[in-house]
Length: 260
Image (cartoon, rainbow, N blue to C red; front, side):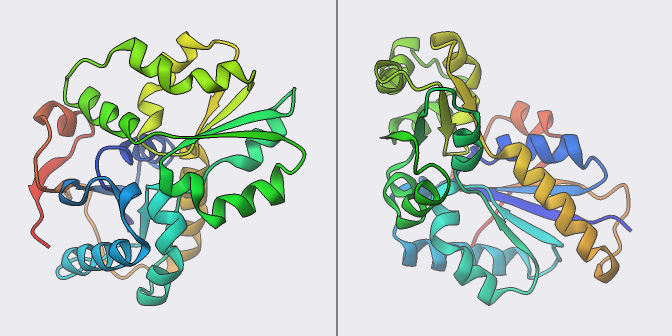
């Protein structure tokens, strides 16, 4: 019996998490939801995110079952996980900034956090830093434009290298040697960042989330209720604007517009 999971974000950021899941768990049927109509999640309030994501999940659950759902957005995860877990019985996995591994990897005790304003300024992030990086200098940079740049890149539009360099320049100036990519959109630029600042180690949570999902699915395998076939179609749900067909083909998914 195969298991089915949903990965969701306000755009294509969560695809960086989906890549890790498909690599580590190729037997799992993965579906994706790009909530373009509510892009970006990082600018929304907790109440707005609670209501929106709950409605989207209820719409999708009308005629199917998921063994787990991954909220592949740092801003949404730090805001709504507790609420969603109180509303649904299946496991809901969130994405949080990789502060702990960054603190373990740094050689000079200077680390960076590159995220959206919602993640950078939330008390949850303060607590992560206090718990795991209290002995480190942490440079926090909020960037809304980088989310837009990532959407541009995936849609085949050019992004100037100088614009990317300007975003990460504070980390270079402060000699950070490890930077946490605290938004799932940002790993789309990991190669460019590495070329601009080669001595900085750029880390994200994608691999850790895939490992966590593997553990969760193992625990829930015995209670799976829906039998799936190998021929089941993996769907790329979206609200608002669609994405290039080349993108959905890359992830072997069938696009389908969702009307919540």
